[in-house]
Image (cartoon, rainbow, N blue to C red):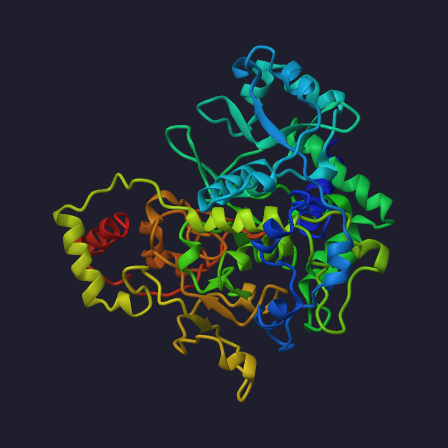
Amino acid sequence: MKRRWIASLAALAWFSFLGLLAAGSQSSSNPADRMTVPKIWDAKQLATWATPVAGLNTAANFYSEQEYYAAPVDNTRTYPVYAPDKEPKGYREWMLKQGPQRLIEPEKIKTERDWIEAGRAVFAGLDFPVTRTDDPRIMKFLSDAEGVRKGGDAITKDGILPSLRWSVGRDGKLKVALADCSGCHSRLMPDGSVLLGAQGNLAFAFESVGVVVEGFNKDLEHKGMSINQAEYGAYGMPWLKDDIHEGFKTMKPEEIGQVDGPPQPGTFSRFNGSPYYITKIPDLIGLKDRRYIDHTGTHINRGPEDIARYAALVSVADDGSIGQYKFFDEKQRKLAFRFSDEALYAIGKFVYSLEPPSNPNKTDAVAERGKKVFATEGCAMCHTPPLYTNNTLIPVTGFTPPKDDPVTARLHIMRFPIGTDPSLALKTRKGTGYYKVPSLKGLWYRTLIEHSGSIATLEEWFDRKRLRDDYVPSGWKAPGRKTRAVPGHEFGMDLSADDKRALIAFLRTL
């Protein structure tokens, strides 16, 4: 049982981003309606979208338009999964009576508000088709109120398990699957409500997620791929000397599980990333005002279309190949599903509409003092109001931006080293050699700080103890390491206790 859980989670890290997911809609039959939706997988737009990978100075390869649009569209409506003691009476019977339904109906979308609401439904309702199952184990578990209560799954105040979704298959059977967008970008707030698009913090139970993710293993077998090939294909960097990911080629499943097992809530070992250099799940609220996407600025953000494009890339259309380096054969990389352009565009519109929740931290005398400390310490040079970011990229130690390079020339680079750990930026396929300057807005409702989520509080971020090798990170723990330094900028560490307290109070009002 444990071995299946380990292998399934490892497979999830790969298949989550390789093309075995899709959700969306069939294109509208009205040509005029189709013209209002921009072509998402557009070769011309893709050509100027990505930042080159450090060490190769070339961007990742993209599927051709022909390959991408040849994939079938999945457009299955899904429904919330309730804890048994909160499930409405007759709920499952009602879903079955509905039969298979469409998740998005583009012919009904007429206004900007319609697009945003359609995007909300798609964002909340997408699931991973490969994980849909009516396995008796999960059906029994979801009928056991005591078992669900003790299982460890995140549950909202309304009794919903946001990591799972119900759907009705073409075979007329009720099935459970893993949530897609909302599975990572949902934040369970202290009052039990869910904040869509925020930095995720959902917890998972083996009895639920451990069953549905077995679908990824089955698809591995279908494609003739071992867990070792999947792991190396997700993270390997053959051009890098002493690539730590080479070890995945020979690890046993138990060993893989020790490195790439169940992720800490709020983090994820993303495809093209690394479980050794984990990635913090980002906050999507305010993304409309950010120039770059990803902690390492992998792609530029030119509008909702780029958000839509990115949703397709990370969930459907990324095979990991860069230049001459390829990790999967044609059968393995073939897209099984895709989003429709309408569904993608709706996601982009929804993400651009996201606004932060009301901040309970009001500006008092202490916070006002902190605002002055923020100004006198020069924090605004990088974290410029009102966005509290200057939207630039900062090169990491060990990387020098190429000279006389047209792609580099169009980037907004701040050549001011701050001592951040360069591993994610140099030792992964997400690595561009840069980190983007993050926005400080919304710090009050996040729990993980730093690109890998190693720090859980602002107090710890401004404590010099985190720079010591004997420091125990309060957030993400690196595989096999109990202690390690968490490098990063040292601004504010030497303030007086009162000034530091005031600065933190101000930051929590943003």
